[in-house]
Image (cartoon, rainbow over the protein chains, first blue to last red):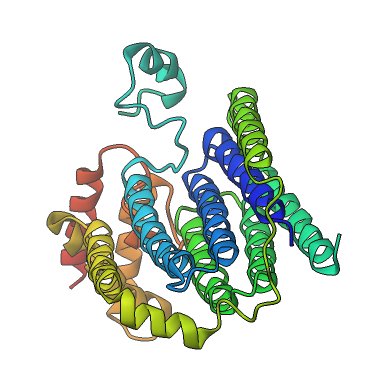
Length: 116
Length: 238
């Protein structure tokens, strides 16, 4: 099999994941897009491992580690999202601008309704 | 183009199309389910690359655990189930430009670099579970153990993060303890308690509609007032 097939597929998946991270508003959808990017990297690892014929299977073992770390990351990320939701009643990352610059806050003041 | 290449291209097309639906679908739950399709197609790609063990781990952990966890998250954040146009922010064109530039650059570089390289797939299975297991536990033991410590740390961190504050915890526990009495309703002590709490909570427009409502803090306004209110009603009921 030509090496370009898995590599191009993984590049496409990675760019789709970048679009999702940048364009989605719900925090959980952003986490899903991060998962897409991690999977693209995993495909690269496996493809290069098989291509090089590595005797230690470094690529595949590292893919297993990345999958485990992704599971840990999604657990922690969901815990943080739930915490934010419990505090702010929203998981919409466009409205979480307390650490942003001042003009954003002024822009968002009307639709927050002065609740806090 | 060999048969394996055709099969890989088909699976890749499925994966990319489902990934586009993950980032583009106006329905949250559908996006999560399209993620299952993407991950399943990628598991098929791993199988074609003779990485069997990785493929089944992918199916088990990603499709089995991560997506279910994501669906739980959608449920717990009370995400809008069904169509909603609000899921994509206004900077989608900038995001599309960035993603297109990244993808174009990566694909150009990859094609230039690996134009004449072929994967030799007929030399046996590269990722059978026997070989992977032997390499993990012979050469990669230390990262494996570190990873288990990391998983434990992540677990503890998730538990600590999703705990409530101590001042918040008591009324929530009282409310959940009161909930079975409310649901059972046959005993005399559960009734007035439930009625009191509903009266106290009616100011926040959160009445009997949500059975899970008492575990979540008050909708808006000052939280401390409603918390003390609910403790007061609990104390009055007992």
